[in-house]
Length: 92
Image (cartoon, rainbow, N blue to C red; front, side):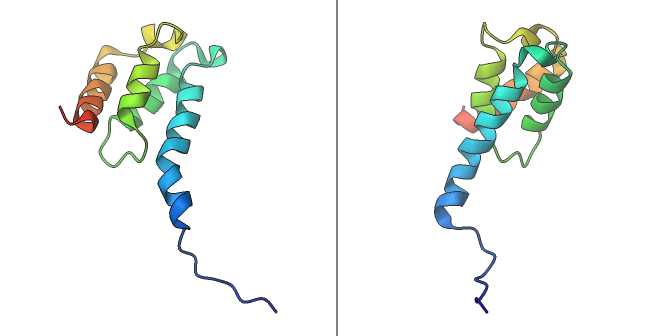
């Protein structure tokens, strides 16, 4: 019988989590299928909240990009909260 190792994540996996989750969410935010902004608003709301494990600045940049149809439909208050989280992540 094989011995089960500890359940701690491998360091490389933990280091890449932030980048992986950010990339996955950035792809979801601006998919044309979700053009009504509901998914983008939910992700932006979560990214602007304390304890978000991804990169709020990268998500903000993606949402504000010209190729993101959902950016026009996200409520302004949610965008302001995401912008504040992005500024805090950038250290401003």
